[in-house]
Image (tube, rainbow, N blue to C red):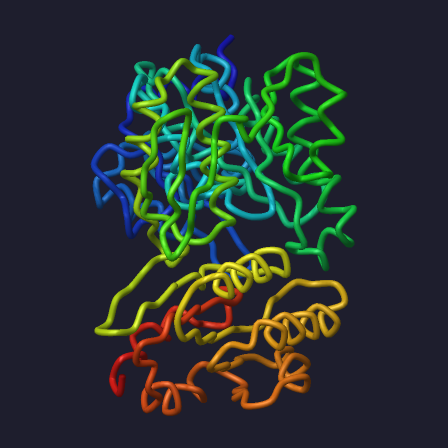
Length: 426
């Protein structure tokens, strides 16, 4: 007798992709009607069919009106179970990566590197949670030769759950930093949570890639037989003012990446590429071709102003790295920084930001957000605002001529609007 998941998989094979949002439905999609605290997509299942979906998976019987509706006990669990079932039929390696900082950049670099030799499929954007990972898996077609899956987490147990969906054959942790410490329960909780990927690899005999520049990860190298260690001995950072220039073997290349912290992301991609037989020449071509998007260390030029737009997110580890990088650069420098969210000891961590700024002696300092008051108290010639909108009139009138301006903070602060405010008076 055919099980529910086998029946659902047969309908999945007859459909063309999976969707959980009627706003992005495509013809012949398999639509899953998910629920949340403030929404019930069962109500929109019929609309999904009207918009072209082939089938709609619902979990409330009243919405089933014909055989295009598939009734599940729980639509979200059905989506996840379907992803697991599909994953079990894939023959290609599945490369998973997580970490506190640099996940998406590293994922994009690895994808570009591996695409030089293989047909790849990688997590789109930051689809790295309990819904994004199953959706990514369900879009891997049989012709794919390597899949790259990004995994995000803000509490212990989440990476372990994502591993049950993706069942990765290869795993890499970019680094262990002070991200989401409030929810993880401190830095040791971050280490425990991110290490769940390596725990899975130990249990399944998978291949791990270990960042030896992170002492917490370096300590794990002894647990594995024949791990891939990086950075490579012949990979060298030649400069970063503002773009990273690297040397691999005897070959040099200037990248489109800013920030010395991105060296670790490049090192990871080099290690993965070499492990999968990509030539050094192809590696460098791929790395040089990558241009950051989505406000991750993006360079924006406005006349004599150079903006480093790095406001996608922030935590103490990435904030210090960004400030250290700016300090190492030449010329006049300004910072527009937003507070960092989801931190244990938030006041102390923002006091640290004040100390780092004071040490660097930047020419202009603008701080945004309630917790940034702690940093403001340690500084002179600093401007603090509670919100981005409160800061808008000041920033729009301020001249940043001949400055390099770093914009960084947690996404929820709303610094994504700031780059557009700069330049009106510069």
